Length: 291
Image (cartoon, rainbow, N blue to C red; front, side, top):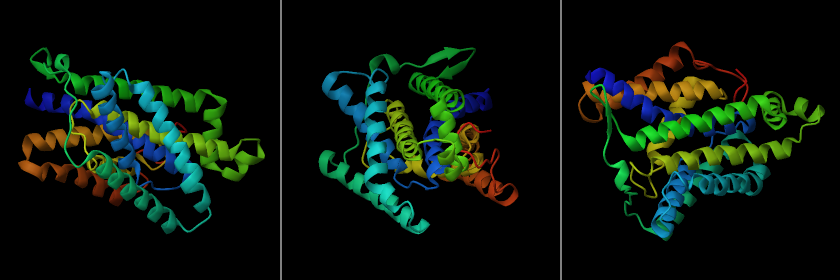
């Protein structure tokens, strides 16, 4: 029963990990940029949820549309002001720019909101839900449900709409997409906006059960990279599957291994994938639901 409980707990948190990784892999698929600022964008989403709750009494689930809209705008602005001018530059310049952006956002948060840990306490979420001797943490269950719904909506958007197909075409071949009439510049704005929105929404979803601070995003950034590589960089379904695998691996590691040794499971899986299947479980050249 303990193993089953650990698997359930891992799946619930793994859904949120998946959403974070989906945003990262979506940006990589189209822009071919590994975005080191992704964790900082998640942190901004946490603060949007926190201040909406503190100042307006709006719980994080009701403020999700606001979080999504604001973070989408932030992502599009980052593409316009920061990433677009360096698109043709060397890859290491792009990495350094996103790393610098991460440091700027984290230090700006420190300046504005101090390094104090903050939390969103919603009374009706404090008591867990039980069924068949299994315990379901309400905030994690809701986070998983919202993350799953958003992932399904994004998958449908990428596969069923003309704009989504343009994003996938741009991910496969920018010049070819331009030749068939896709507005590649617009696609890049939307892709960066969606990637940032995924990170921000994930931050809002974890705010009720994880501390909010300027450095909170760092705890999820490394996991997002591991998950994106595990699933296959650029693969939307791979990112979701990878998040669930890492979530379950961490949870089972916490059950059988003491202290922080549970991290061995995560990085053991990561190293194994790099050694034996370097393209990832569902490795694809496309961004999002191409496979």
